[in-house]
Image 1 (tube, rainbow, N blue to C red):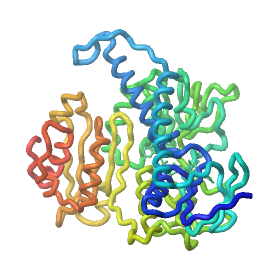
Image 2: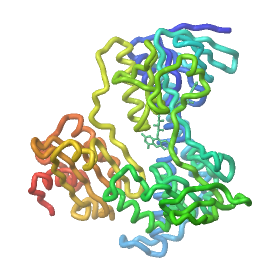
Image 3: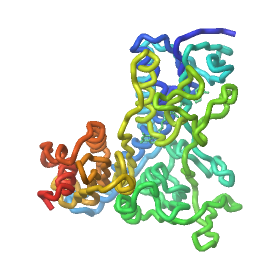
Image 4: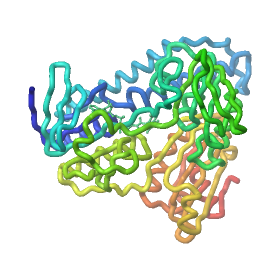
Length: 464
Ligand SMILES: Cc1cc2nc3c(=O)[nH]c(=O)nc-3n(C[C@H](O)[C@H](O)[C@H](O)COP(=O)(O)OP(=O)(O)OC[C@H]3O[C@@H](n4cnc5c(N)ncnc54)[C@H](O)[C@@H]3O)c2cc1C
């Protein structure tokens, strides 16, 4: 049995783990990272990046399809397009390879040793890794658990054709004729919309009364409207029950207690993700839990001295940029820097059509803290949005009524994901309404709607 020792051992090379290891390497810490799959984790391999590639391909296809026959106001007419999904998936795989190879290169450049294989805890300072060349024992002064998460499987709809998770949905070589999506959260809707644009007849089944239920109804209204325009059937208040005996339909209990049969070639189950806390001997070190997640403090320390945890395994929001920020912070703490988690904002984006962004507190959350001011500006009054056929949606700013400190910002509209940086910055810098209103925003841009929303909250919007 081979043995190595290091100062820092990171388990899992997703966005949390690889960022932690790169930063630790930059800081001169002797670091080893263990990864069972490919570097980049869920995000680069089967999550953020491949889903956005598929969404882009679907958007382009839908745009051209819409123009076919001279439809649309732009005066462009093209022949009806055809689609080679296998080619689009190969393009997406190329992007994933470039990025995962890039991460491997960055780890090497930072002098991080990568061990390929599945790590299992022996104790809080020692893991065993099953590698291709035998068992490798790694002893470390400090361990970071960055094992991420996995899709939740429904016991009555186990994964296996025709029931698929987002991972298989991103690797299909043909567009399913009929796709049933179980779960109307962001992953289900992002993929459901993409497949509808690629030509599938999509039905979304959601147990709650609304899709994207964690966001307020006003914010999700433009998305719900677009789902209908795309011909996506949404059945809310309905529970998936299982597969039909022939395996060609999803059985659903509707809100009136009746059983409905939704004919489907593929059934995509996107009912959430669970932290990966099993199968690697975590029970050996018996860390405190917060529900199903590993409990951490504001420095990502677990209940065991010298063991940190970051990313999806530690709680919501399960997002790549949260994992990365935690990873960078932990590397600096291990290097002796004074750091703690004092972020005001972790923006969240749904890459639906239209896109949806939230940063900081929602109006409801802010109201619970005291009196607030809200300013909302519609893209229908924004010149740039009009030139992009993107008049649906708005930017909304929520601030304290007394001192105008901005507490939260939300937007829904075409391409608003790119506004998330401005929203996050405003919250992190402790901006007041006057700061946003007093910043000269370039014209014509969708960002002007952000400035106008702040002006509106102050009572003197200019363009509405
Ligand atoms: C379809 C989809 C779309 C998404 N879109 C977005 C998005 O647009 N934006 C966003 O911010 N987030 C998105 N996410 C979520 C994002 O992917 C995760 O939040 C992020 O990957 C979490 O990073 P992590 O480092 O905590 O874990 P992961 O990325 O899950 O990485 C964990 C790694 O640890 C490895 N591992 C686990 N256990 C062991 C072990 N015992 N030994 C060795 N290796 C191990 C795994 O193989 C994996 O590579 C999406 C997710 C999905 C599924």
